[in-house]
Length: 349
Image: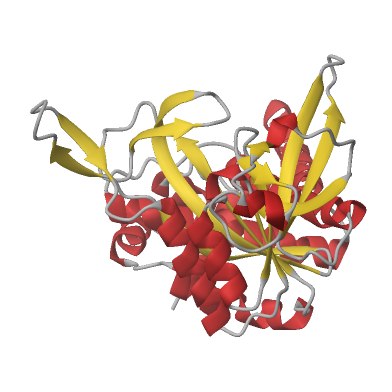
């Protein structure tokens, strides 16, 4: 019996266009038919549990007690696809506007310089009618913050060792902070500049809070205090970046581990960039948004298979000491060489 999962993920990595059942069939010279692939996509039931079964042995090889779990979401552009419960409108904070696509929440495990996807959720938004306006709109039955906490608990249930949870400002919610700390883990999260902060317990009790952006802090400078709405003491650290155009960017971080200094918090939080690299590889190297699948089930199954393809690339990175893009470039150069040789043969025939 053919391992269609292995075949499909290999196809995603080696293919450079749309991911189609016809294209995969052609790649195998018809050994696998178009219908076999479509049945595989439509009958499979792939989710985070399936993912964990596949990646668990690798996690156990690279796990460490000081590892990080990183949460972030990304939007897969689907402007030409029919709207559904998963292909709909979402706010894209990178563009500052609503875009049509699939919103994917990911949980990445980063340990010993290896990044492994250990969980994912596709955001579902269901059609409903506003009572006052009588207009139809879509809304999720569960928020991304609730999904994030559920995924975090699954990581604990699977006995994955880690110390820090890294998040951006979207997940800087009191409920998330309390949930993480209550379970003996630490968080480092970005916070918006308009959040309020007290620099002492006395100021907190007297209600003397000031906006985070009003604090005078240098790059990697830290101050102990209290974030409004969250009871426990935290460390507030500022990062100051110089952009390519010479402008200045500021990122404010809060950390539950008050034993750290600003340099340590900044160094640990830099690991959050691994999830951005992961999202880029999903879209560029694993055809995440290039599937022509039409139904919700086949779309989610394709997303899972794209995630598995990136996991394969990460395993190849460990083995060959090449990043995902270098590995793909190596494959494409070889493909071009074969195509060029075939062209020369046809010209001489």
